[in-house]
Length: 422
Ligand SMILES: *Cc1c(COP(=O)(O)O)cnc(C)c1O
Image (cartoon, rainbow, N blue to C red; front, side, top):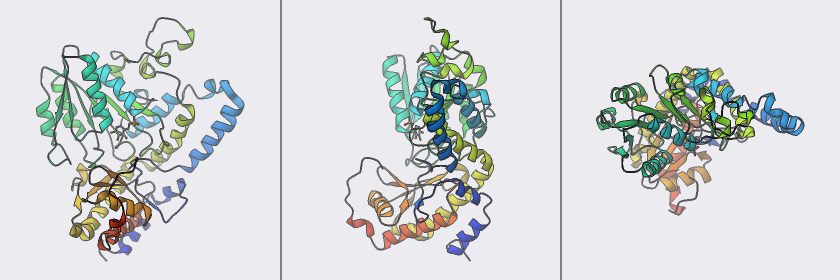
């Protein structure tokens, strides 16, 4: 038996200690292979019951009393659970707003904390929203600020050394990167880059959207300053679920939230007219949280905590390795390229494959062969592996079906224009 046999994948599933967690999720069609959990995670069954109660009982019957019966505490309570997935303390993480908004808040807070320094370092494979927000902040702050965008060679990974060399020892205020790159899945060395930023006197802000729930993260251990991340990807929190932010404990008092809303106010219901920031992470809240979406996050995080991040990572590595082995044997001969790092330790939990006709191959996979990955411009198909519910056999069949599309040229009947959401 070799890696290319279905029996090999079946055997891995049989020996998988996490296999039972698949039952925690609503899977309406077992023949559809879902490999986009890095974009929108599946629905945990316990979230269905939780939301039903939130609507029917908490909103329907308890009405405004709900605020004192668990709603007000939810951002910190759920943040405390996320903390356990990212190597932080419970009082260092809170749930609020979107990743984009949290990113804005923490970039501004970091720049305010480093007066006289005007350099921000990021790179070209960062997630677009982060780049857009940085560009806007630099424009608004004026001539003393500049963005250094380190370019990648080949679009897959940026060497740590290139980031380190871009950090100006006297001028750098902030280094900010996506810990796992959204397109290639390349993983940064958090410790080395955090250390380099600190040596220069700069702060570091990590976007964990593609790491949290899939890759072990050690924020406290690496002494990272700031972080943000999504809850609707590997945390399975639901479309548009609110995001989280992390501020290392000793930085919470010195930093200020640039959006001074009433949920970040000390003694909020005194309704005083002068702003005074609340203690701890509460000061990074802004306005009323979207309670239904917020409560929908918790079940998915509980499932992840039960599985344990070490076991999730071990399975994710075994699965990305299987996918890459099948790519090499079956797809590479058709000119499909591996657009992710080959080394498991340099890779998050998704694998990108490239082909000039990737957009049309992606459509054939989705529309004809019931495999759901996603497409990233211009020529990338991303296969997201969510070890809680992705099986080894799923990966086997996905690669087998992609081979069929290429061998039979099934993609040629699709148009080359791009749909709204890929
Ligand atoms: C998905 C993702 C986001 C999304 O931000 P939103 O504000 O939720 O739209 C931001 N950053 C990274 C790195 C992402 O992967």
